[in-house]
Image (tube, rainbow, N blue to C red; front, side, top):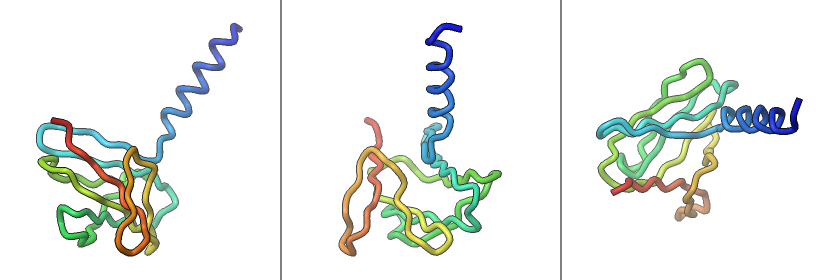
Length: 106
């Protein structure tokens, strides 16, 4: 076996284990959060004045959809604890917590 095969296998496994990712389809942004042990996940974003709403559980992958028309900030509440997933852009809010920033691509 060449050294390339184990390296590729490792990269595929690491890429498939992302804890947080998104997909855009038309005007809808769908966010996915892998938290298989969570009992409840809420999603709070600036586009709804940070009023939390329930994400739906799809076998440990929590899913929520929002409009993609503008940039927004967001975080999750996982089993009553605020959680900011790994994301490309973050900022500290007025309460000392972190928010992810999602910017729409123009």
